[in-house]
Length: 537
Ligand code: ACM
Image 1 (tube, rainbow, N blue to C red):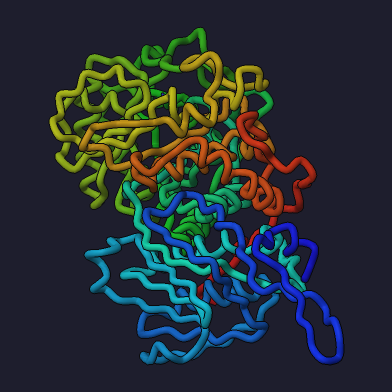
Image 2: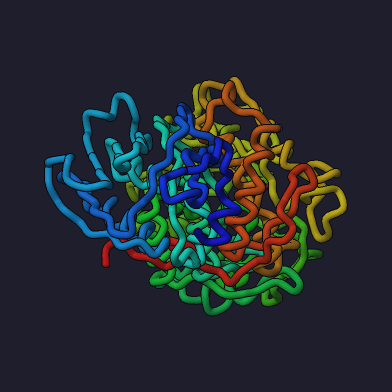
């Protein structure tokens, strides 16, 4: 038994002595009860029994039709614990100690993302109606294993799993994070890491704020100056750069394999200076659409102000530009949505613009999302509004809503009041873990939650890590677990185990003061069970 395993398990039942005619023998543990796995997000229903399943060194994974993909993830998980695992494709579920059952008729019980995980004394069964549900069964199972699995450091460990039964499905379909790559650029490597961490917590939407006054971060081949000129900027001391279309597609496929859909945002008609700098012909006469005190072409903008630049909405060329950019972006985007921004700008033609932008997005067979300001006018019925400050008087009835209220979800605000380089405009004392966890709504149109990190002051990977973690785990539980089942005190008791796991994964998480973290854990190199793993290969 490795020392890691001893830390992980607790022997709580009696130890008795075996006596034989040859005399006193070694004490033998009759029965041990492992602690309940500290799963985040908390499953909808789980029941535990006191037994354990000791995983053998050699394992057989059998799966029915459609289950192969899950078998590949599971094999990787078991291999990461240095266990041997072979496949056996069969419709006979009595064939091995790991059974994967993909069954569309479970849809009624489990929906698109739910699963059943059953751990008995002779093996483990994973069931789901979809690949996504089965993928989540594996993420739950991953949390049964000691955190060292993330670094593949469990060699010779005796792996035991607490026996039990979990039936789980999410409350909301939208469980997202947003990364502002425009103020300061974060590239493919960091974003893949981020996706990997999101997947562990069953977060399923990654919104990329790709453009703003300071920089343009996505290659548009028909508009080469967006990358040649507009991508060169950032906030003071931030990083510049852009995602090539190849990077974007690679990230998108990496995310999709993990049930995460990318939502690209082109923020319009305001927050658009970087594009106006690259294509100055899109400005009105005498740059009347720009506040010249902030910046004027050909200068980049490195500051922090918002609401001072906008497209020239009188010019037909503006709409040609929007159409070309959205067309190209739609052609490389697999998810159904494109985000048009639409925040923080006043213009007499604003409403006309958002209606046209919505229609352009539909022309390319995508559904539009926008910040809540867009709902000042009526756009398509399938539009999704992203609420961030609650100040908008919406004229749209029954519009679907993503909740990103700044007082609960703006993770660019400090974890604590005194965290340096954090925003304070929405909540001056920062956003504690409890502020995030305590989110509550009775709006029946809410489809989920999303936590943005704006990057005016987030200039390196460690800072991005500590803005998201552990608060994004709270976002995940708010998005997954029904409010009636959530309990903050219980959540913070589950977190220390996750501190170990996040450390093993190389995450520089913020040690929130509410939690009794294990302070002996050190942050390791960036790695994890599924980091850079491609289930197709
Ligand atoms: C926003 O924070 N302006 C959406």
